[in-house]
Amino acid sequence: MKILGIGKNYVESADQISENKTGHQIIFSKPASSLVTDNKDVVFPSITENLIYEAELVVKIGKTGKDIALADANGYISEIAIGIDFTAKDVLGESRDKKGPWDLAKGFDGAAPISAFKPVADFADLTNINFDLKINDKPLQDGNTSLMIYNFADIIAHVSKFMTLEPGDLIFTGTPAVGVGQTFKGDHLQASIEGELLLDFKMV
Image 1 (cartoon, rainbow, N blue to C red):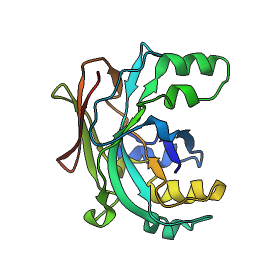
Image 2: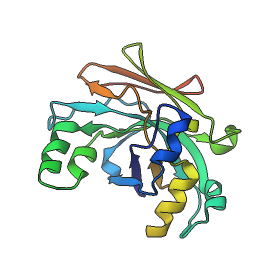
Image 3: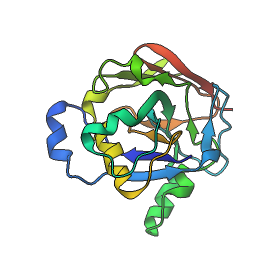
Image 4: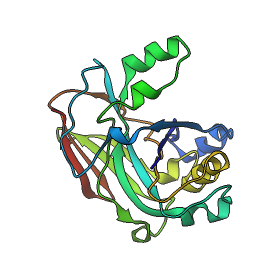
């Protein structure tokens, strides 16, 4: 199983999409050991003092594909969940200073909590899905897939040029342009898709 993510993929208004759609997608990966499932609490990582949350929709690949045509790409999605792409920002900053990779800042244990998945058939329009994040009951992120620079199909078609996508692969598809911030030990995170609470855990 591969876990991939895409960075800087949302804008604040739809009229900003075309100017940001340069063809350059920022793709990174996380190891399977970063996953936390079943709404288990997440242990605050000792390797950082600046843990940043990003709520994101996560698509699961349902069949094998390579060099997937854009028109066919959404057909490779089997299920959708919501997750948090955690980043150790201080670790990332140090790595960037040395022109190093993102792996340690994005791939530590607990860096990818995800909810249970919903069948893709439950979503009538993949370009109009609402999702949100609350921390300690305070609304902090509110997103809609209409504001993605690269939509699900764009991402799948692009990634499949480089690597074969296989059943069970997960792709974190980007976070809303507004509301990203710091997470602290003791925080209670709750994330929803279309108003349905699916991800619910604490940092311990």
